[in-house]
Image 1 (cartoon, rainbow, N blue to C red):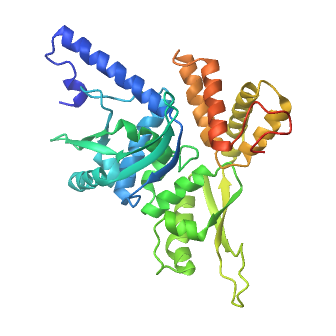
Image 2 (cartoon, rainbow, N blue to C red):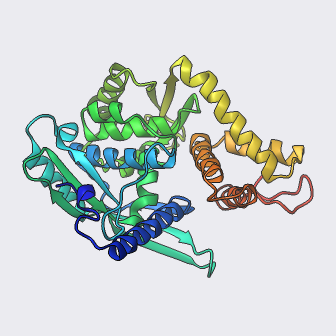
Image 3 (cartoon, rainbow, N blue to C red):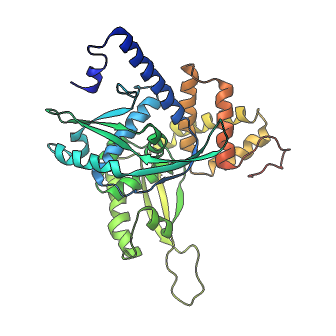
Length: 360
């Protein structure tokens, strides 16, 4: 019997009503956490295995479906969110025992982020584990994972390619190599650009690459395989790259590359209607946020467009619009939420004279 089948079985009417009230409250809390504006997002033990990455991908898929109103996120008898995962999707056929082992390892993975309380206006640092409980559905190839509600902002961050647009579940699952999967998400987060610069020092830190790896080793063992695998996967976004010396040192030695330049390639579909729709939606809400002041809108649009976060902002606005349609938010509420995002993340302000705005 699945967790969903167990809900309400043999319960008295008053107990059923209590359970329904608990689940409604849980859904409201989940919605609030999805709207939470966070910063300083970190994953203290970001080294996940290839199969653990697949598990996180399937978890973020459920959040994506919830955010696009395609499917409501499931909660158990205690109002805790959970996902049911088919082990075949994680590790191929007949590997349930190994998938269980990898899932149990996720209980040791820690996330953290900071946010500002809307009540006290104080900064709060939140940290915890992602997976809290694992249920082995005996006689099936499925496992069910309860996850920490406070991990939802992290999972949204993880599912957006570290701050960008949502990536394809199918492509991510089929890619081989944990670093290839991570690079795919990074590329997805930059799909609105034609190129972006990644400090090799930062790349080493982010991907936990030791000093024993030379730049040539990074090319041979990480970048080249990832480039080829992503392109062969028929993803709608892929990359080419080069290593350059962006900041040469005057030490008399041969300049050493310090930056990776990723050249982003996308299909025509990505650069066509969908790109136009993203731009139009963001621009329309900028007009609302700045009360149709064309000077301010133009300045803000340039700031947003030159960031790597256009896709992320579009997804959040679409979610807010869905919340308006569902009666959970109003247009003034979304306007204020969007203004807060622009203030906190882009240092844009709304009350100065023209041409004297901080952050421009």
